[in-house]
Structures are given as structure tokens and as C-alpha cells.
Image (cartoon, rainbow, N blue to C red; front, side, top):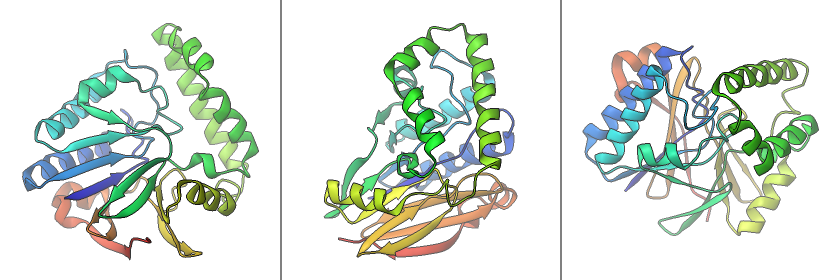
Length: 259
């Protein structure tokens, strides 16, 4: 069994190249005919305004996911800070299983914590206040009751506000707080966490614990995997991936899971 991990693809009609790359990735994973699982750890879309939203550019994404699950590859999804309005209708359309924030996974005797990671960015107090609001059931029900056109406008406003806030903050403020990660691992009694969100792909080792940060799709395609007890992360420039596919991915990081 091999398990694949991706996050922060930020798919939208503005980046048809990333959509093509993702569809190509699913097709090649299917062609491998291996027992596999794919975990999407949030921010799969640049913005999601409700499961009733349908567009041609998204239809090909959902068709790719459906083909993936029909091939026997299991699909798991958890919310990020851009796609927290994804609901059961979308999950059903692509045969995905939903994971709650901070889901614990047992892999060959190793306990691995999966999360988007934004809850760890405690120094960004402005973002945490926003996160509390948009993750509330009342706010989400209010937004989903809006007409579709109004939700589209709201999503554009939220994206612009997010970009404006990011330019005014240091990268350190928007990164995770180490004590929050440590407390989370202690709570779940495990030594390894995999997350995205920060757009700082790397492997961090501290206090006999492992923090694996997934890469964001922008100028490059990123894919991580766990097979046995080995975590690997791969990268390829988008144009290279579109030309060569999975064989064009270069392994840039490898680590044995902490137990």
C-alpha cells in the first residue's frame, strides 16, 4: 500500500495549467494499478462557494477524481482555509471520505497526524479571528443561503483581503507556532504530523518528532508519499510535469517516520 499526500493546489479557472497537471497526475496514478490512497489536506481549490456551484473547468476536476476512485484508489479530504465550504454533495460526487481536522492515521504501526495546518499559526491573531468566524456553523449557513452571484463576489473579496493582509505580515508570523504543533502531537500521542498551508515545504525534526510540510502548487507540482515507514516528497516545475508526468518528479526529501 502506498499513500499519497497533496495540499494547497488552489485550483481555479485562472490556472488551467495546474488543472491539466492535476488531471494528468490522477490518470497516471490510475495507470500504475497499485493499491493506493490519496489524501487532500486542504486548499484543493482557490476558493469554494458551495457544492451547488458548477463550472466547466471544475467538471473535469471532479471527473478526474471520480475516475480515480472508480479505479479503486481511495480518496480522503479535509478542509483548508480556502475550501471550508466543501460539503457532502461534493464528497459524494467524487466518492471521497471526509476527515475531521487533525485526523489520526495508522500506517504500518506508525501514528501520523494529518491536518491542513492553519490552526497552528497562532501568532497571526488576525487570521485566527477570521478562521474562527468562517469555520462557525452559523456563518457558513448564512453564506450558503446567499444567491450564487453574491457568494462569488464574497469569495473574490475574501481572496483580495487575504492577499492584502499577507503583504503586511512577516513570513514568520504566518508560519506555525512550534508550541502549538508540540501540544497537538502530545494530545494525539504521536510523533509525526503532515500538513500544508504555510507554502514552506520542508521536513522539520525536533524533540524526536517529525513535521512534514507539503508543497503548494504554483510554479511547481508537489507530491508526497508514504510507503512502509518512509516519507518522501517530490517536486517538478509545472511545465516539466506536463511534459514528463510522474517520471519527471524529483525526490527532494526523504525521512523515516518517527514512532
